[in-house]
Image (cartoon, rainbow, N blue to C red; front, top):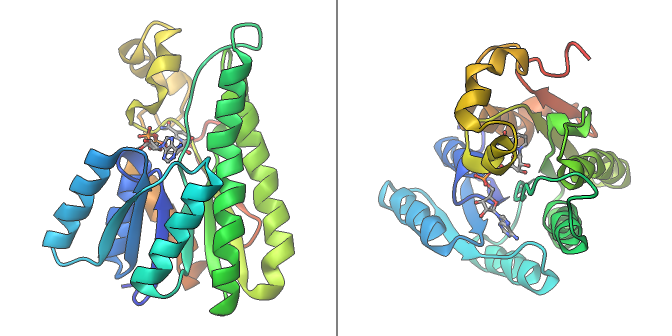
Length: 254
Ligand SMILES: NC(=O)c1ccc[n+]([C@@H]2O[C@H](COP(=O)([O-])OP(=O)(O)OC[C@H]3O[C@@H](n4cnc5c(N)ncnc54)[C@H](O)[C@@H]3O)[C@@H](O)[C@H]2O)c1
């Protein structure tokens, strides 16, 4: 129960890595707000965990909208009275090179992946300051360090998250707010499907995965959630501004 009495918001948590974070956090004793644009899936996850006796609620949020973000933070404070942990995890992944992408896709990628982390942090940090500190965990990527073909908006957004993490770590260290990011490799969710389709499809890539990811298998969402739990807990008390690279070795040989 490393997160007993802690309150967490996890964005983009109706499925995938965010869902795994929610499950691990409640198992460690946290109260959690599940936040996503996917209402049916988010509500179903909340109901399942509530039936198991966990302290969770779903709140529908588009994290690229400041108004929605303010409502999410107000809802969390109304339900739980404080916020100790924020996982900025929501993102989209629309493939394309610069000449393939439209301005709209570029803007939407930056809004959902980067501006959202600025907005949610902006409105959560004052609550953390009032309660003596907190832990912010941004989901970045191996693509914060290495690019991939035909993925220019996404890799740019993940590069920006690494520097946003470091900037926030410097600004709020004095408030006992730690800010770190997780940089996953290829995780087994549907997130990469559209990009994989440009290179022969998911099955073709998985067949050859050891040429991309040295551990020779996709990473499971729970393996990333375990890193988030470590960063959320006091076990990581010396870490701030740190990228934790959980990429199955992708960047080791670069
Ligand atoms: N899957 C991978 O291989 C991989 C690798 C590196 C990093 N990541 C990162 O992990 C995080 C989670 O990815 P995932 O693989 O679980 O993908 P996913 O698509 O399963 O989860 C992303 C979630 O974000 C939500 N979302 C999208 N736009 C939103 C918005 N505007 N407001 C609120 N929620 C929104 C989606 O509905 C979805 O539930 C992302 O930040 C992604 O960049 C994933």
